[in-house]
Length: 308
Image 1 (cartoon, rainbow, N blue to C red):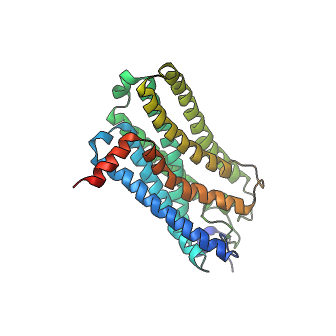
Image 2 (tube, rainbow, N blue to C red; image 1 turned 180 degrees about the vertical axis):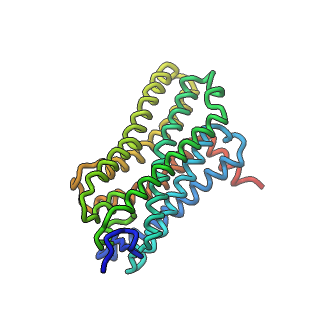
Image 3 (cartoon, one colour; image 1 turned 135 degrees about the horizontal axis):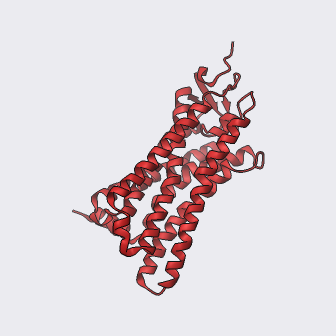
């Protein structure tokens, strides 16, 4: 007798790109390269932020947490993805699927809030420079980061508990590359309208609301930069702000396309490639975007590399 509940499955089958061995081999190589670059880039940010006194500022404090979130996110999904791409075995254990779902959801939710915090930091630095040290006090920065982590972990816990209560009626084949809430809901044999609505509201809260707040803060920043556009400080501010905006649009653009798109507007393969982009490519690009556009980080990196 086949159980009707997700909690009774010992394993799931992640189809991924089954039936396309050449594509799987290509994606395995590309994903491996991106994962190694993710580890290298984000670990470098963490080490530099800890060792270089010039980077002991709120901006790099938040950036180091962003890097740690990206490391946690990719480590929860990419090793299993590489295992599935490498050969005919496409399985993931029940515990592995739930753990992957929880960690990835927690890190994604927390990163949404952290990007808002980073925008607030840039607003305070550019629009309130004389009061910046008072506004972004170390204790306040710590409280902001703690709130970010708590929000992400709590929201993910609720999402994970709810999805594990959805009856699947013997279906344990996931036509995707990761264990995510939308694809698991598709396996249900009962009405999931309430779950879909809850997922939609959560997605709005973590994607559209933060993105709106970020854009509002950058509207004020743009006004301030327009007034000081001829100064050297304006050029530096533009560098850090443009880097942050690139990360924002990469992250929110792909996430919104996946979680808030109308039903059946994209093919299953498009969803899989979209998941690979925000799950593998974006975490790799983040540290390099900040490093290549940031003079302080580049100087700290050179100092560490050439230090005897």
